Structures are given as structure tokens and as C-alpha cells.
Length: 276
Length: 249
Image 1 (tube, rainbow over the protein chains, first blue to last red):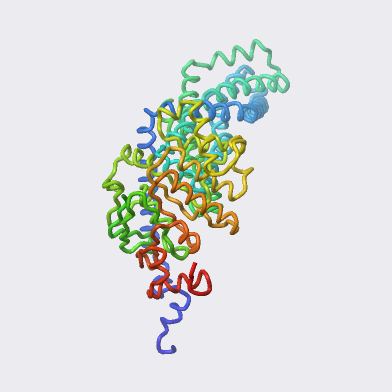
Image 2: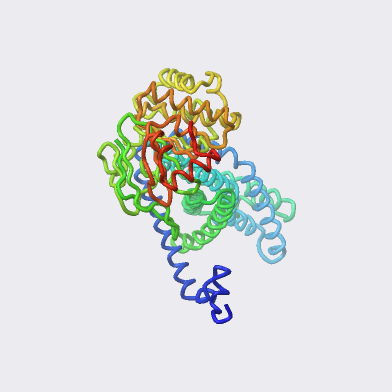
């Protein structure tokens, strides 16, 4: 044994040459992993497009999902928007007092909500609420062989499970954003009335002075992209879940984190593309 | 007829199947025995294309399963009923909805009176009362879930039935009920079946022939009598392990 030092590492199942950290191996592994995910994700998107003609299957399920996403998320979305509107008004009041005409505050409140806070906060809330749910549901179905069972019955899991969730989320997010914008503006107005010496006429003037109809379109177009991000990523993560409860937990966490980062990245990208 | 030739499958570094050859004739019930973790379920999933082989060929009715396109594969799967080890029932749907999903004929699937009648018929075939249809999988016992899984698999009137460990996790009484049910369905539906199990007694009872999967290959195929008489060390060791002494049942 003393003449054969390699035996020590064999005993712990770690070959000597692998015990040394090799950054090239690590980069290789990451590259392979990224390529695998890209391939699988592309395959999911292609399967979704191929599943669209099976509308008899996905349309009724989309309506169910839309009710879950829309009605179920409305309260928390409006609550978030109410706080966002109120806080924006209070901070505008703090910064503008005595230096800038007060109607500017109305412009800031309305524009901040329509252009940024409404879509981004709503999407973030949905990433947590809907994204986590989709990833956990589909992940559990994957590890308990329910998705295999659908396939074994000659049915497409994409048409039954993924398309309804993605379409419902993508369509419902702009509607929820509209509610969020209206709620945020209302509570922004109420907070501005309390904290600033602003009249209703000044508020309406300020809001209309800075508003352009394209801003609303921009908000809704952005919401569509966010809706796609907060549904398709969790569906993909859930579909790829492995190894029981731990795998489902990991898929859920990854889904929420990925969807949230994607929202921020898309926000930056779409601002460049659509506003400038 | 189901035919597998030289099927090889590995997951990462782990080689599961190393050249499996197996033929199941029309109308036959084949029991596939083997210790846990030898790839019995993996082998079964090759037959309906849930898993594709790395090498080798899988034929069902002379159709090469791994080469089938999306639509052809879906069509083939509608003729193959698959009973999953843990039921794999859709837990957000009622038993009725679960079994209805098994009605794979699209003309019938939209016909509500037909579906009601067929679900009742399938529940009756697996010895479950009609009121079970309104329950959810969470309300059922392990044995009932297995039977609902079988009812879903037969709802589409398949030509083939694949059972993945239909009696695992059940007490001996319930295991006997499931074995009797497999025999009964075999008699009444005349389907070609493969029953994966590590329960020797049950496999000998339901199988016309028995195959032993060991070391990634089919070690032996024969009638229950031939298996009992075998001098092959792996076969004897497997049969002795199950009963403590060489089986005579």
C-alpha cells in the first residue's frame, strides 16, 4: 500500500487526476450544460408551435388557466400597484416641494406607473405566484410519471399542459397591467393630494401634459413579453425536473429566479428597442 | 407482435441494457422478472417509445418504434395501454376524467354518453364500484389507484397492455386481486401483455412465458415450468431469493 499512493484516492472513489480542480473541465461542463438547455428549450418551443393546430385541446384548458391567472392574481397585483403608486407620489412630493411646479409630480406618477412600475411589478408578482406554481405543478407531474402517462395515451403533453399555461399567462398579464396602472394612478393621486398642495385640476393637467398614447402601447407590448417570460421558463423548468421532491424544489427556485432575471433583462432590452 | 433486437441503453456512465433480445407473440402474456434496478421499466418504456434505444431495434407490429414520426408514434401509443408503477393518475382530475383520457378514439372522446358508459364498463372490469368515478386519486387506496390505472389503460381498447410492477407496494391480498385481474383481462380482452415484476409467484401465475432480465440482458425465456427446472445459476438464485427455497408453485 505504501508503494502505491494512488490507492488512497481509489479508496475514496476520487482518482488523483480528478481531485485537482481543472478550470477547463468546469468550462467544458458549463458549455455542455448550456448547450443542452438551449437544445431542450428550442425543442419545447418547436413542439409548442407544432401543437397550436390542436386548438380543441388547448383552448378550453387555456380558459381555465386564464381564470386562475387573472382572477387569482388580481388582488395581489392591485395591492402591489397601490403601494407603488402611493410611494411614488410621496417621494415625488419630497423631491419636488418648493423647486418644481407641482403638476410635474402628476406626470412623474403616471409615467412611472405606465412605463415601468406597472408592467415590471406585475410581472415580478406573477413570476413568484404563477411561475412557482407552474414549475412545481409540471415538475411534480414529471417526477410522478403523469407526463409520461399522457404521452403513453398518445396525447401531447405540450398541447395539454404547456400551451394553455403559456397562452393564458401571456394574454392575462397585459390585462392585469391595465388594472395595476389604474390602481397605481388612483392611489398615487390620493397620496399626492395628501402630501402635496396639488389640486385635481393640476393633477389632471400634469398627467395629460406628459402622457402620449404610445406609452400605453409600450406598456402593453412589454407586458406581453413579460407574460411569455413568466410562463414559458417555469413550464420548461418544470418539464425538465428530475430526481423527486428535491428536483421539483430546485426546478421551482430556478424557474422563479430565471423568470425574474429575464423580466429585468427584457425590460432593459425593450426600453432600448421601443423607446429610443 | 413485439420484437426487440440488440437493445442497448445507457444513462450517463450507467449502462442499463446491454443487447436485449425479446419476442412476444400476439395474444401472449410475457412476465418479465428481474431484481430491482436492472432496467425492467426502462425496457418496457422502449416499447411505446417513451425511451429510445442507443442501439438496437424495437418493433411493434413490424413498425420500428424509434423511427416513427410524431403522429405515427401517437397513433401506435393509442393501441398500447400502459399501467404505471405508481399509477401516474392525474391528481387534479377525478377518476372519471382520468379514465376518460384513456379513451383514445377521438370520435368517442367527445361523446359524453359513450364516455360515461365506457368509464363505468372499465371500472366494472377492474372490480370497482361506479361511484369511484367521482372521487379524486388522493381519496383512493394504493390498490384502488392501481386498478384505476389499469382501467385507464384499457379504456381505449388497446391491442397491447404493458404493466409496470402492477403489484409492487401492495399487501399479498391486494397483489392477488391484481394478479387475478390481469388473468381476467387477458381472458376477456385477448390482448398481448408484458407484465414487469420482481414478484416470482405472481409472474408465474399470469405469464404464458417468463423472461429473466439480469446484467442488462435477457438471461432466460421459458414457460414457468421451464424456469423452475432451469439449472442456470442466475435463474436459480433469483427464484430461491424470492421463496427462500427453489419454488415449486
